[in-house]
Length: 89
Image (cartoon, rainbow, N blue to C red; front, side, top):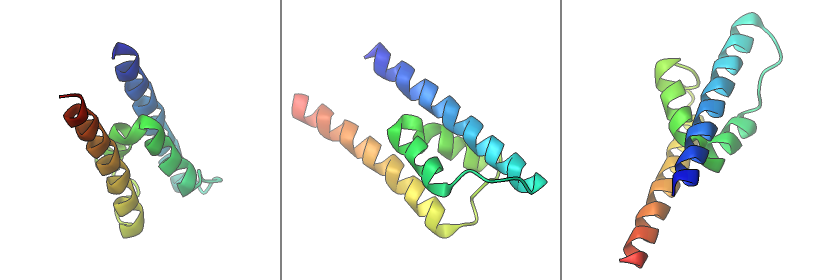
């Protein structure tokens, strides 16, 4: 279980950094990180970092479709863990 927690922590940190970098690129007019890349980063376990970045950095939080997709990814992860926990009980 500790490897899984380490994976989520590393993926969250990487996702947070990706959001930070995308915001910096947006402010400087540089080439942006694709939204699908940010979603994929969240989907592979970085969803806590994505939600934190959206709140702390105030990045991508006005795009309703993007926000909805991030919350669906987070919901899917939490629901999966609850489902696995219920099945193992």
